[in-house]
Length: 295
Image (cartoon, rainbow, N blue to C red):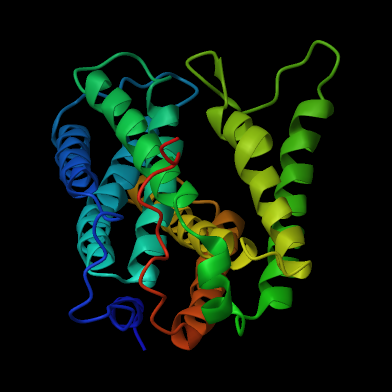
């Protein structure tokens, strides 16, 4: 069964879930979609990525990512529309794509200034707001029963192992050059790698912590796991598209890195299938109307 078909099965025909699904959420998603189209089309068509001797193929790399980001736009909009109709699956998919957006554009704002800078800032702001709003309003206690049959232990250990391996790899590259050295290949335009900053400060701790929550059968575990699995899929695909950009530009592609990300995309996709197939339509009020109740 395809991912799209699995998402669509989560819709409850005829069920109205307002005011939890606010019109403003759909409007802001459409605004974000326009911002993403503008930023990616600029990257694909304009010569806005200045390269350096140490990053001669940076333009090809970023244009590869732009193409993948552009392809996520209809997924984000479609998932949001289905979520408004009551699909928990679609809502979680949209959150996974939203997590990908600020992660991506926090890397773009450290390249030399170009005409799309304000679009990058808007993508970070809108993506972060919609992600936090949509995630924190989920009533994890209400949805936990329909996620109870998910393979928690398998996903949990996958998260712990992958998160720990990447954390060890990133730390090794930084710790081994102390004192006084500079990690090879981790600087773009003399700015430390935002990948290491975001991964070590936020993403990898979240992945490992979610693995622990799954093993402890915490009600939030599967919700967070699905969001992170979608994020892993989009990030892995983005890196494969980046390698494709390098190959088209005549550069050398790292085969081991390509195999690693193909594996992560494949495993993440397969791990999503089980909770999606076993998920039943959620209770009507699985999304709170607001983050804070009126006093």
